[in-house]
Image 1 (tube, rainbow, N blue to C red):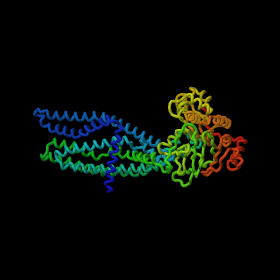
Image 2: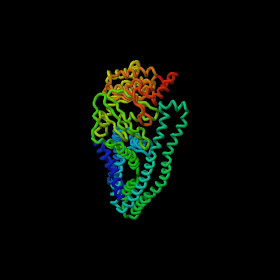
Image 3: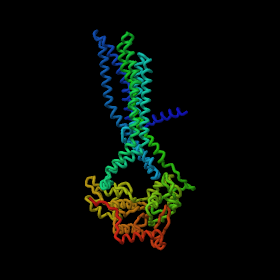
Length: 621
């Protein structure tokens, strides 16, 4: 039973590689197959032509042209083989690139289709994404395109072997198993060794991911400042070297055994091949066979010997980890899977235009492999158009709360409701809700694009210049952008022609303009996570006055450690230990004289003493 399952699994993997070739296009595949099949017959044809040439040598003295005809056929076969090789190599490369392109697109779409972000953040999934990326990092890794083309080459290899066996069998049939069995046995042993090598490598992919992380620190402009100022270069290089050695050491140890096995494999096939050559020569010497027969067997036997090669197996087995990683992504990131309980009434959230009523009802969330709840029974209601501030110490759960609120994380318990209907994966409910939300995260993205495109990415499509202008004014960055060399068309990257770099505060205002652009295009909930961390107090005050003066067509959730900015919001929510411990207006919480009041007074004293907590970065270049 077990062997039957293994055979079915083996055949299934082989069939899968063939099906990948559909992405190469029918014309390319048909051309590959036709040229490949003709090439398969070349060794047998070469053996026959050589036989005719040698057999016709005796007739040269009598003026017969048989030898010349055989020689002409021999030259024609060799020439045709070279011409076909010139065509098949670019076709194979084209097929490989098309298959890999389709594979990479599937990986990206699978990651993007994940219902929530926490599934993508898991370490196992990150390893799988790297393995499935079809971007080999070393000599052991191959792409699905390599595997599909190699699978076709393997088929051609067997066809070549069968044709050569027919030539041998015409003269001495008993030599066929003598040559074929050792060749196939050598292929089996070498393939098994290569498969084990790939298994060892794939099993240590996490070490490679760590090495890439540290290697990126050495070359990234974002980390270059600290690497130089803290003199971390040698330390980081040591980290990279350590992780690389940890990943490769078992591979190297196993690789040292392979030459020994290959020497045994050579003997396994060389001895039968020598036996075949010796037998053919003996038969000619004793007059039991012609010289032409010996020539045919010598040439064909060498082609049978090629069955022991595993050049195609490198591509086939090297592609397996990437395909297995894609299977893991299909399983772990399937949008149809959910551990969260479905609502009893099966209703789905219908997200209408305008500011919605949003509610978190008794929400609990734990990170994978963690027993401690980051959010523990949180209930929060945001009325349409309401401005809500969320405060708390570091680690209180603020960032996790907004990821649950915006549908990026799925709670382990409790429910997210919009307009009194639960938001679930079913029927694309999460996706519809996220389309109505716009968020400014602390680690916002700095796109290396013109300023206008940077802002218009808040709602992809053709940028609306009028709405971009409104968004830049709301973010307080309109005058600055107008002063750039090419206005809003100036690239925001020093590495691009005519581009500039921005300070941290300017980048944050551009990111805020992106959020406001989404609001202009219909987003009903704006979430701002530390939106003024890089701004001075005066700029911060001006920005919040503009934000609070906006129409209440969108609700606003503001997360900030600067409690002075919270005084004008409608309601402040205090998070502590994953729970909401205080809720009310600034005045109400100050009268309560709890944790919020204590934090506010501490900050007030610090600012009176001239403390400036802006995040510092270089100015515009």
